[in-house]
Every structure is written in structure tokens, then in C-alpha cells.
Length: 423
Image 1 (cartoon, rainbow, N blue to C red):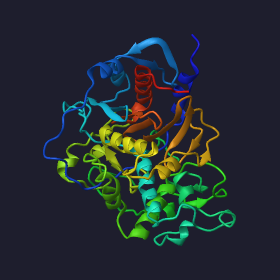
Image 2: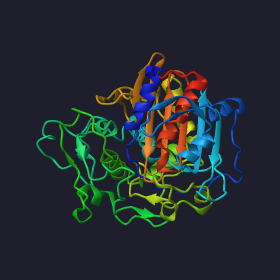
Image 3: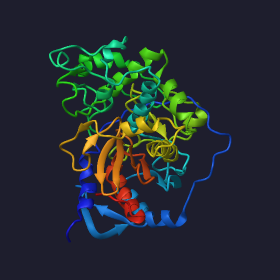
């Protein structure tokens, strides 16, 4: 059977969804009583029972569908959480499976998952609020405001400077020792586990740690000339915010985004209070094993420390969509929301992403752009996907590194059930 073009795009995205996010957490207290799962039984049931199966290479097995429960078992995924946005509102949110493999505590809509690099989208939006206040500049040399670490000057920075716009769009020309590892590679030495706090600083990692085979961050292309995904872009953003405001990045994100949008089940902090930590899903490696202590912790915040629920991330997406549509009173002004979701640098080697905006990837369809970002770590994977012109979107979060293909099967099922454009 001939494979439709839109499906090819979805299945080819497997190669793009390998960006490594890094995690940490922020101190908040959840409400005294937790809301029940938000459900639309008809639509959720259709999604749960219509997953098109993909083989290990991401190719569709046409004519073969399966239930979500069956695919979770096949991929050795203990838990999944989903939120769907329709008509500018949260249509339903639901958890599946268990928080820890082999145990009975269920995933609910209030279970927090590691978002990985999806955190970059929220970090970028928060930075843009500082631009709107005049506290940061999009197009000035970031070394003008950096104190704790500075981008090393060389022949490339003499041509063009590293700016905030280029950091947010991964076009700063940076190469680091923090990015080019996959979930099947050994965990780097700077990871801590469970509730153990990292001892290494961002500045140390950016400077390089030869004893741990971490090369120094440096500019290897003329800034602004091409797309190159690095976690260092957002590590530098984190230092820039902290040096400019004198406030820890996780506290800045709490006040600037999470509290403002009512994201009560989200945190950037390393050490959340126990009543929130008790809601975390455990992380699991590619082979289904529990990550030591239940979670791995990287000394990053902006690049990927966010733990959240899909419902909370849906609140962020809805706020962005409403600003994009011209409404005032949101996190970003309408003009800045459109700037965030407009092409900043072309991505030439991706079948799904045509360009990177400011903290998001972009793909055109017949009904306007798809805006999306993925997250992946040694123990989790996630996906946000939305249509700012249509008021529709989804969030999928999985508590296992083995769930990369599963999140695509879920995406394809939801897009089919709701009739979303994919091309």
C-alpha cells in the first residue's frame, strides 16, 4: 500500500526527535485537593484504540492497529500521560499505566514527568518577556551582559556575535560537550541521581572538564549562518538571565511563567518539596530498568530541567496560541508571540522541520504552521505539538526512554481522530 506523504513525515520525525534534554526542578506546593482527570470519553477511547503500529525503524505497519495498552507493553513503557487541546481549550487529559515499572501506583493527569528539552520552549518564552521589558536585547552581543562566563572570542565571532536571538534559535554557531549523547550512550559523569544535588556548575561545564571528557564550549561557525542544536545555547541563556537579574533561573521561571499561568504541577527546581516530589513518575532506561533513585539530574535548568504534567504544558500552549491570535494580557504580546513562532533559521536536513523559531520548531501545513518541540533523556521522552492558527494541539509524556516511537504512534492516532493537518 502506498504510504501517504503526511504519514511519511510523521514516521521520519523519529530521526529528529533525538535531542537530549536535561532536567532539574522548582519548589512549589500543589493545591490541597487535586482535580480529577479531564476527559472526553468518546475521543480518548478512539485515540486509545487506534494506534497505527510502527516497526523499530519507524515505518508504518499498515492494516495493523493496536491499543495504547498493547503498545505500552511492546515498548516496555510503564506510564504515559496525554493532554489534547481543541478549540483553544483543554479537551481532555488522562494518565495511563503506572508511575514505576512493576508497581501499582497509577499515572494520573496530575503525575509529573520529565519534559526534557520541551523546557526550552518555556525558557525561550520567559526570556522574551525580558526582551519586552527592555531588560534583555535580542540582537546584541550576549557578552555585554554575561559575567559568570563569557563566550570565547575567535575568528567567527569577529564576523558576527552570539546574540540572544541566535541562542534561542540554535544558530549561535556553538559546539559543546553537553549535547551529542544519546539515551543509549553511557551517562556522563556530571549526572546525579534521586535527590542528590549536582555539584558541578554551568560555568564549569561550559569551560570544559577534560577529566570527564567534556570539551569546552566554543563557536565553530559564523553566528547566524546555520542551524546547530546545542544545549549550550540554553545554558548560556540561563547564565545571561541570572547575571542580568541576580535571580536563580528556577526562581525566575517559577514567578515569570509557572505561577502566572497557574501551572501548579510544574517545577524547574532541583529539590521540590516532598508533597510535589511524591507526584513524580519514575524514569526508566531503554531496556526498561529503573533509573537510579528514580530520576537522573543534570546541572541545567533552561535547557531541560522542567518536570510537568501534560495538562500544565497545555496551559502554556493555549496562552501562546491566544497571544498569537492577537489577544492581549498573555505571557507574550501578540507581536512577540508571532516572532517566537516565525522562522529564524532554516533547517535543511529535516523532513518535518523547515525552520527553528525562538524555542520551537516549525513546519508549514495547508492550514498554517505546526509548532512543536520534543524532549528526550536517558529515562523519559516527551512531545508538544500545536497549531497556533487553529487552536489545537497535544502533549505526550512518557516515563521511559523506550517510548520515542510510541509518542509518534499516539500523535498519529490523535491527528487522525481529530482530523488535524500534517502536510
